Image 1 (cartoon, helix red, strand yellow):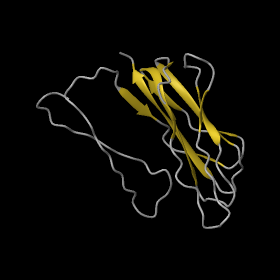
Image 2: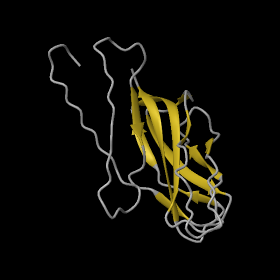
Image 3: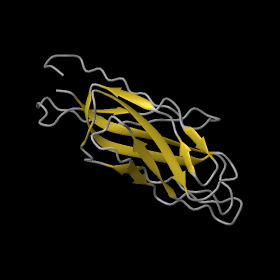
Length: 170
């Protein structure tokens, strides 16, 4: 932002499951006229969530980052389509790419989420699973593949989506 410039922010969101009413979104913005002393962060995720039912590794959607330099943050969000009695979430999301500075996949465990015995109980909103300050080097064009490994088979289709934070080439 430059002094005297008009502040314009475009804030948008994407519902992760079908809604019967329009979802609400709130955002708090904090900015300053002081120049930053750290590189600017950017964020990216696949266009849509992926589904799973089996207690195996389930492939997610791929996405490509162009002009990236360092992968800094990783996020995994998992949610039940229809919660089923005694079927919990316990697992981890995996980010892998031949364009990382290391060939090993990066894994982020999720907070275990339980579904109770009573038919009316549903799992609470899981804390967003995330790792920060990863500082993994990336090639200029980096294709990232995602997958989620759940330890418990689900009767109903459940969903996951994963995203990253990164810095760009200077």
